[in-house]
Image (cartoon, rainbow over all chains, first blue to last red; front, side, top):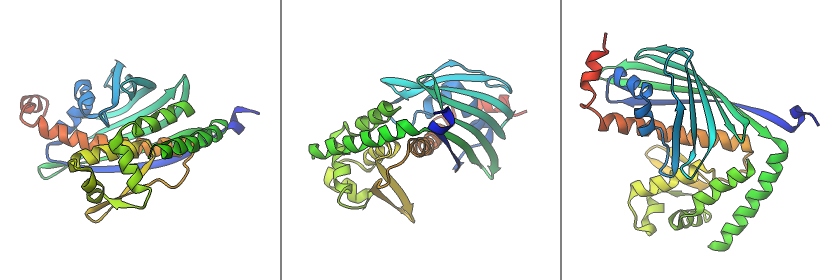
Amino acid sequence: MTAATQTRMLHDKIVMERTYNTSPARVFAAWESVEARLRWSIPFPEAGAAYDQAEFRVGGLDIMRCGLKSDMRFLAHVRYLEIINDARIVMAESIAEDGKIRAASLITVELEPAGKETKQTVTMQVSAIDGADMLDGYRVGWTAALDNIAKEF
Amino acid sequence: MQAAALDRTFQALSDPTRRAMVQRLSRGPASVSELAKPLSISLPAVMQHLQVLEASGIVRTAKVGRVRTCSVEPKMLSLAERWIAERRANWERKLDRLGDYLDATAGENDNDEKDRSK
């Protein structure tokens, strides 16, 4: 079997909007600063992230490990493609696990002033890679896991 | 990858409160306040637990009007589908946290902002 028959790609576009009660400059600064990012971008208490490299400039590359605090198994590379101060950030991100790429995304952050507030639109065009063989194993594992959990109730 | 996905599942279900929530939802969908009631914990704490369950793909939530309804994810998602669902849930959470961060640091960055406004 070739690699192409073992895996398939799944493509999706995720658009997320938020309005923040502050200026575009402060929202932009929160994306620009690594210290700020480490404060807000940990999605839940058990999650962790650490930067090996951070270069917030056009053509610059961030290298970051993330995952659970106890197991930061994902390696993210983020290349900055376009940066317009206080208005727009375009990034190409790849995420690998165990040395294999899992997903590649184009992430665009757009900031617009709205009175005293800032409207932020984050658009994520993501291509994720499925491993067909792993998928079957995963399904079996998942069913087994749920059976085991049911026993706990 | 399979091991990682299972790790996240077990991590999500390692907590007795979260297991109680999944147990309740296995009987049918419920609103966040319905979920919170028998647990005698705060609504924000319930929301945090829900986010972990949602990020691990076990539970799905949908907001209709002002009510967020939670249900056990019935579909067996493929790895990539789950990956994307997880990412979406994590990013929604991150962007909310960005709002909290901006509120919490309002004032302390005023000078920076003036410095770089030109």
